[in-house]
Length: 291
Image 1 (cartoon, rainbow, N blue to C red):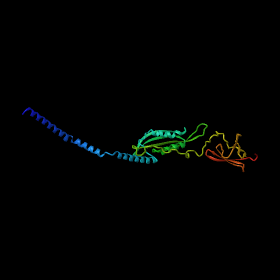
Image 2 (image 1 turned 90 degrees about the horizontal axis):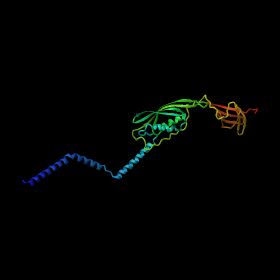
Image 3 (image 1 turned 45 degrees about the vertical axis):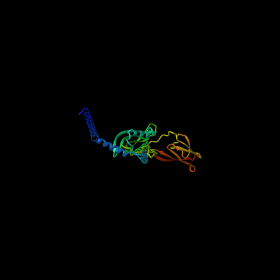
Image 4 (image 1 turned 60 degrees about the horizontal axis):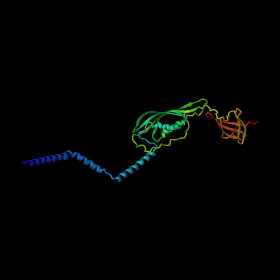
């Protein structure tokens, strides 16, 4: 056998070995990987959408989202997602910004706790001030768009007296407020609009009906006690107080602690209504005959 034939047989044997090895690698070793990629390719082909169909789906979802936002926005209260504990401080600062100096509010963070499927931040509010200021703050907390609840409230009266001034009848308060939030955004709209938190004054149930203190006559009004009716004229009545000062007053005019309610020209009298620390008194001055 010559060398040329031997070389040809060797090359042929090597080619057969390479083909066998390649077939084993492709059809045995890579068979699992090829099948997996084929399945993945088929899945991708199944999920291929037309751009127009995708756009139509997007517009439908956008309309549905707007409808849900509208429904949530029209609800009286919402529960926002992951509210910061600092937000309530800013809320209270906004409410009390226009309160007078006599009304003081302290806010203290207490804890964070769950409530069924929701969570809440709890705060302690304390201080004192005018009854209607305290009422406005309570109303704002309870009526805020983002759900807030006052779980505990105690009120007590407070009298503050400054030298040579009218005593102030105030209210001390202490309350616990819970600010609710959720871990997802299903319970609040994308756009936040606060409720109307303004409210008018109400009757101060802590203001005493009868008081020992009577405000001083700082405006130098006519003091009806001990006064004398000097004369009646079409424009009103001349009255002199105990110090000899003369005043011309007419119906409806303010006097010290009250008002002139009626001038009776037929009977030569004038009537006053006075509020003496919660006690309402009617005073009538009569024109002296020798005058």
